[in-house]
Length: 284
Ligand code: KIV
Image 1 (cartoon, helix red, strand yellow):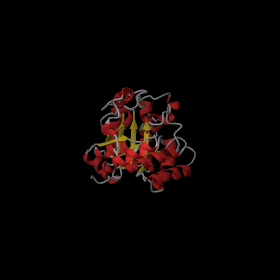
Image 2 (image 1 turned 90 degrees about the horizontal axis):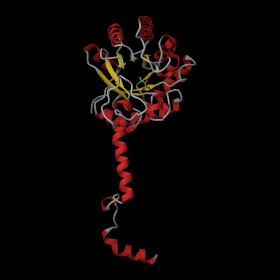
Image 3 (image 1 turned 180 degrees about the vertical axis):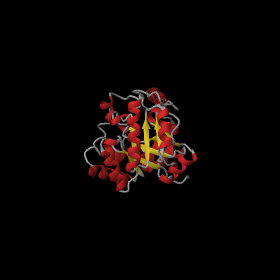
Image 4 (image 1 turned 45 degrees about the horizontal axis):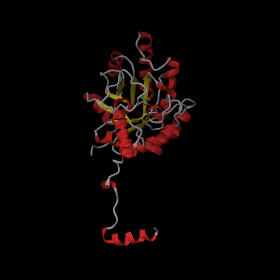
């Protein structure tokens, strides 16, 4: 069993050019499979709203939803560095709210760190959480909680002005005390620049190869989430197809009497068979 990584391991990996592989997980089995596969870290993303809870976006996800799923992930992956994603309205109102809710992820769900979306506009939140002794990861570029403001789920930083904005955000996030930064859906040129410029690890989801590691949403990479697949996703399996086919076969087996067979049944204790038969006969 590999030892759970710490912030220092991720800093060393950045220095040594070793890529970090991570995915989202929301439940016990996925977390356990990811840990068995040697994943470096896990994010319990608020994408659980879409991937698991069936919402159209992440906005309805609550702190209690996140805590419940983080607890399941921790039970499934006790030896993996796990990050809890702060849902909409858990940090937008005040620094106090942000610290309180970040603390819940550690106290109630044994997470190692938290992540929140936004750049300079959430700087005091990042600083307050970091000052409370909690590892906090920044997240800029396409930030799903503000997709309304961004005009949809669109790539960011594709022109010099918006790229400059993201560079200013990234530097400010590092200076505020974040331990790492996640870039979502930005050009690889910008990711490469920021990965070299910043001392903290810089990770990519849809931000190309030249980062310190890659994140994918498990529902996308496993082919579980059917609504849409972003351009940056590589699909490693089609679990939806496997599940649908298995369910179809089961329905057919039940309806045609192929399931259950004798092999799937519990049998009467061999030395009580006669007695058992007599007991049933009493009720005839
Ligand atoms: O909720 C999530 O899974 C995320 C990723 C999109 C980075 O925040």
